Length: 126
Image 1 (cartoon, rainbow, N blue to C red):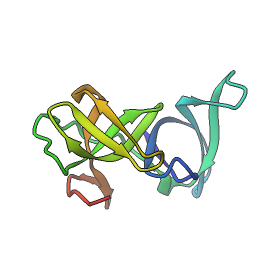
Image 2: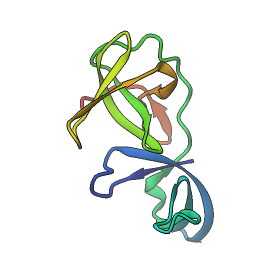
Image 3: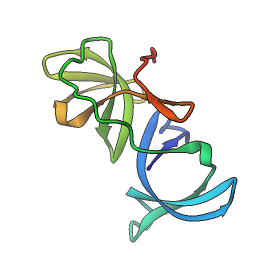
Image 4: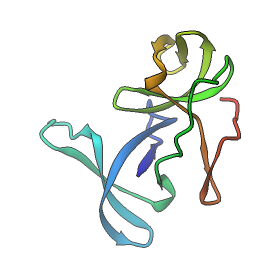
């Protein structure tokens, strides 16, 4: 499963997680697969609503991506929604820190939205 992060500085990022416990229909405890607690001794756990969780997106080959397409870029232990601004090496712009990054196709996945219980490849502008 994945969880969307809405914390300041992390908006537009998604992280792999494991369901740790269901508290009630409106609250779950999840454990991040890649993020650690502040003491860095164990995985970070957090209480979230079901709306923040969804299954892993479908795998779609990234070879046909073009400039202007939205993609998910794996960076800083999570997936970040970005726009392709240059090819053949995929270059992305990170608005949060004003930096550009170069990525290989293995670091990318086609951006998809979870709509009405299924994945959609309808691209939106950031």
